[in-house]
Length: 323
Ligand code: GLV
Ligand code: GLV
Image (cartoon, rainbow, N blue to C red):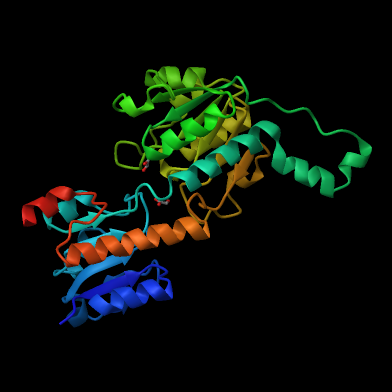
């Protein structure tokens, strides 16, 4: 008998076929709670799951899926998972690192260029006819400026590499100094990072420790001419403090692909600030990258259920304990 797996993520037809050859697929609409949508009898037989970050893999869901062995995240971030609870229950958690680094770095660089050169306002300036009445206000170079990276993982390193092409000086802060950053970026203390950066970009995961870790104090260290970019997770930044800094002009602008509340309601004060460029959490949202992510997420799930070591495990100790 094939193991039953929940699919709560968009699955291309060919991958669905490949998965169906080895598993019995139980569909749950993306973002819906399997504990609420599936009958208890079926729930008790679920061995695996592939889901997006909109599925909260918490103690309650783990309790509702007592036979669950593996939950494969269709995302690199896994802040939707209570990792301690999953590890305690010996549920393997997988994710999709590596395949989306370039796409997220591209949006990071794009936001930086939009902010420095005021590209979004420039488009409206031309369309509205304002150009016929005068030239667009001068903007700022990024060349020769300092890019600060808070977090130096895979994505941070790709951003650092891209910044070399813009002749930027790159500094970073990370929990640990990163030997792979050698020659790409210079390690600085955390406060120093906020003080010296002309553009500060966030590339750390969301956890209890990092929630609101960029707050009023950190924003207060930044230059009034500096831009803050976030393509990681919204709650890493204290958004109320950011809005205050942007209103007061103690920083120059912000480029945000992620927010504390997603989808961001149009009533958010962020939508009223002219010095903010917003995107709809699209860092990894290209055809090519999403395909690579779902490929990896499904491979992780099938490997785990087929006793092959999955390529990307968040809590490999669960796997090792099984062997
Ligand atoms: C996207 O936000 C991801 O974590 O992959
Ligand atoms: C984030 O997950 C990173 O790899 O930097």
